[in-house]
Length: 344
Ligand SMILES: Cc1cc2nc3c(=O)[nH]c(=O)nc-3n(C[C@H](O)[C@H](O)[C@H](O)COP(=O)(O)OP(=O)(O)OC[C@H]3O[C@@H](n4cnc5c(N)ncnc54)[C@H](O)[C@@H]3O)c2cc1C
Image (cartoon, rainbow, N blue to C red; front, side, top):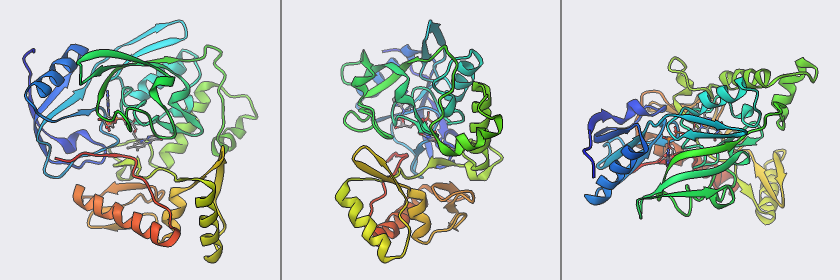
């Protein structure tokens, strides 16, 4: 077990929502060996540990974290034909920019998502009709039980909407060290999202990967969905709730509730299920954009992002529970939290 260089930090400085107390066992890992050492130390000393990437989907407790914070800051991209092997600590959006600059398509619609490459398979990040699962060739990781390096094919990752085996069944068991992506050298963007398609309409059907990346960045910036220190509405975890996916009997009940409330049903079909908009539910449950209480509020651009305007992590949880309860009371639909809430 190697020496560990622990630092004392404020965890709020390492998250986009700027919440969380202190950690005196924070270890920055710049190599895979550092990652192995840090996790071996934690396991060997019977300490809890938490893996931290860019902190854009994480809420730490106000009291801080008693255990080892394994901060993934490994770097490197190796290209071999259409395959890109990317170290977990690379910034996701840097990698998107790089692939677009080389003329490779596949992830241009995922431009502007904050955070690290290693976190992208965890919740199968997605936006504007694209999901990272469509380009993941394999994921390399450390199994914290055996401390051995393991590799998962795309199928073995168990991807679904904002989910994977790493977030559900095998939560906290694997530390992603590297993700291999298969991109397309043809450089032809694939647009599946109406808002983006409308935006690109100005190019009359002739647009490049760069045009798509710029369009996505512009749309996201307008909604404060690009993290920017100077834009308070982006001090969030992005969407705080996933869009509920209902089976047909749940959907029938939802439709009859909407009818009784004289509300037009807002949904779209995915296979034999129905996805409904969490933002719409929140709005119709009576919460307006910008609504704020005790320093925690909704983004002034849309209702799905909860923003820290000088509040606390416990205040954030209370605020989110209130929204969840109001939506359930009105529509009998349960909202699921998207970010990871860490307990001290
Ligand atoms: C303004 C804004 C916009 C956003 N827009 C989107 C969006 O459009 N689509 C979307 O899907 N998400 C979005 N998000 C959420 C977030 O950016 C993504 O979930 C991102 O992938 C999180 O990366 P991160 O490195 O910051 O993860 P962190 O917050 O550091 O970690 C998130 C989870 O992943 C785990 N984790 C991180 N790295 C590793 C690793 N190497 N190995 C194992 N586990 C790991 C952590 O333990 C934690 O459980 C947005 C967030 C913000 C603030």
